[in-house]
Every structure is written in structure tokens, then in C-alpha cells.
Length: 228
Image (tube, rainbow, N blue to C red; front, top):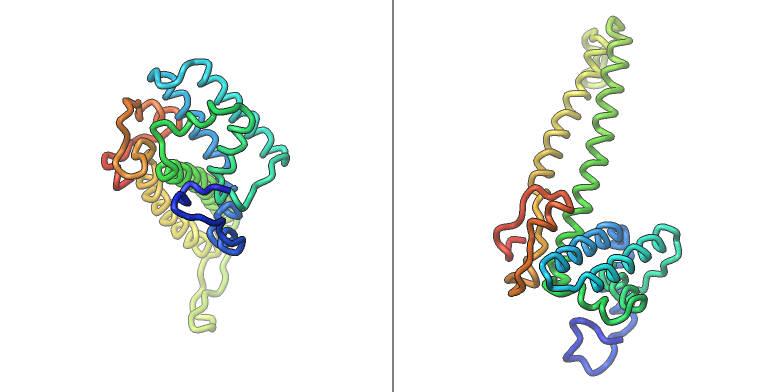
């Protein structure tokens, strides 16, 4: 099978090399982000007149059907295709024909990987923040119920001073609050859209990065393609 990076090779790579370099075993979890990012990119290409409306609709329909297949457990990931991006792209072109290849217009696998990672991180941050909030709420509720309960406080594995159980619980509340602050900082550094950076130095196509950022709910866009 021809590799994207294998133009100078005259023989197929060994199966052990393919298994070692493949990332599909772990990046398949980003399938939803990859497909949603591709849909937004296709809509933008259509809006900018780079794709026709029929081409855009065909690509969106193909991606929608692939998403449904994956979520229904009807999609087989191939190690030989290396990653989630190529697995989906190959299935798309098989399903809708050569027009599927136009999805990579004004896009590189480099900025596609960066986009998927940013989107996955944002989703993970939201999930963790929600769990932290639930834990903080539970700590407050238990502390309020046990506000007058006294228990021994320990230092050096020995009883040292009497403390309120509620005071002990609220110590963890404050620790989790600082964790929440750290997550907020990570969110600020993740909520930047890299798509449009291309392989390294952007693209000559006249694209609308802001449109894609708005659809994918990014508040900012990377100003420097190499930084992205």
C-alpha cells in the first residue's frame, strides 16, 4: 500500500514497522473530532467557492454515514492506514468516489492532527471540569450536614488536635478549586484553532478560518502557522 510519506521507497515497509509507527490504536478515540472538523472544513470550502454545493453535500453525507458506522460499531480500523485521519479518508473516497479527495484542499494532515487534538482536549477538559464541580458540590453538602461533627486530626500518624469534619472536607474543596483554576488555564491555551496552518506555512487558497473556528466553537485562531 502506498504511503503518504513513501514516495522514495521502492518496497513495502515491514509489518513490524507499520505496527510500531501506527497510531490508530489510540487516536481512533478522536474519530468524532476528526469527522466534525472535516465537515466544518468542507462547509467552509463550499462557502468560499472552492467546492461546489453538490461536492460539499456529497462529502458531508459521506462523513455523516461514516460517523454513524463508527458509533454503531460497524467500522474496522486498519493498522496499515496508520491513523484515524487516513482510515476515515480512505473510507470516504471508497464511499463517495474521487470527490472525497477534495476534502484535503487547503488542508494538511499536520493541521488536521493539531485540530483534532485541540478539539479532543477541549472535550476532555469540559468532562473533567464537570466531574470536579460535582465533587465540590458533594463535599459542600456533606460538610453542611456534618458541620458540628468533631474528629481527631493527625500529624506524624498520631492524634494531634481536634478538628471539625466539615473543616477537613473543605480542605479538599479548596484543593479541587485550584485544580479547576488550572483547568481554566489549560482551556485558554487550548481554545485556539490551528486549522489553516497547512503543513507548515499556510495555504494559497482564500479560505475563511473564522467561519471554521465559529462552527467548531473556538474563540481564537492561531496567528502564526508554525506556532499552530
